[in-house]
Amino acid sequence: MKKNVLLLGGMFLAMTALLFSCNKPEGGGSTGSSSVQKYLDVQDGTLVKKDKPFSTAEFGLTVNMNSIIIPGGTVIPDVYSPVSPSRMYIGVEDVSGYYEVVPEASNSHYSCVIIINQDLDLGDDESFIIWGALTDADGDISETWEKEVSIRNVGTGQLQISLSFNNDKDVDLHLIEPGDNGEHIYYGNRTSDNGGELDLDSNAGCGIDGINNENITYGEDAYIAPGVYEVYVDMYSNCDPSIATDYVVTVTYNGRLIGTTTGTNPARGTFPVEEPSNHANLVNLTPVMTFTIGNKGQMKTKSFPKTPHSEMDLEKMSMEE
Image (tube, rainbow, N blue to C red; front, side, top):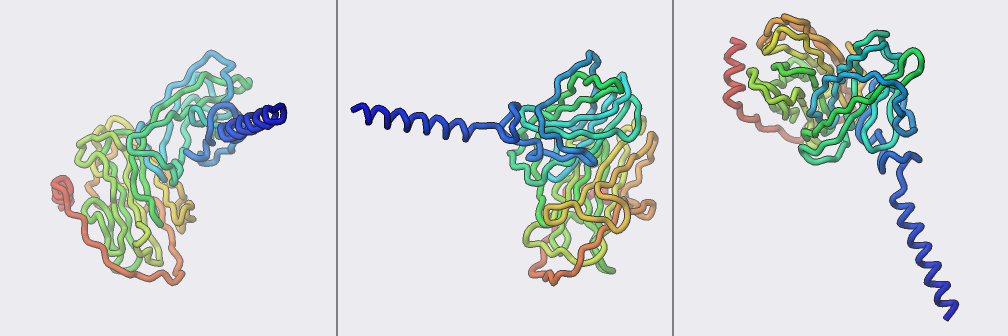
């Protein structure tokens, strides 16, 4: 009988240890059961595998940032501080780890590029909280800012070109495929014969939806033609010319940011105050980046049907004329 009791007791302890190990936080942190890398990366940031730092100062921060994000896209926190930062911190609430960034300039207004994980597997409108803080010249850590963001799922596929911008305007993403007969993918031609598709278009004609992201994707059965691709960002309609607009474009190929032929990836820019509406006149523009897809024997196996134009697409196309 005594042996049976000891055996049952040992089994109970083993089961308890197993359950505890299954629920143990990753990365040794106590702030959550997953890592910040599941959600995002920060351009030029260094991953810190520690818990969220505690505030040691009484000054707070103000942040303006999109509340809607897309997998494989970006978001730009526009942060205002009463002091100049020596370090910036970006993390996700209730998960372990965060990123440390050295600001480009020591002033009271700063921003950085947050790259959303392309494999982020959450449902539409699911949300999480991005937080940020800074360290001043004396090493004191500010109070934390927090911003809840929700997911708008889009196609990622083999090749993804995404655009984000930081206020409510009709900013458009354009892609020119390689070759003399390369198609122009934009709201007037949403799907190319190769399978490239504009599957997210925001604030069309200043009908503000607040998404402030656009996305072009080539699915798993699309043909990624070899050659040079050109990416353009157009201020189709400046819905509020009294404020400047920052934007970021990223291109991901087979799960990685692709190198560029011209420009950078991510490519970051600003439309200044009073930027005129351009109405898709690409003659006035230069590409924000170009990139090259090598010839690795990829074959085109099908053609893709055109996506029907919406009424707003047709209205915008008439403005080009």
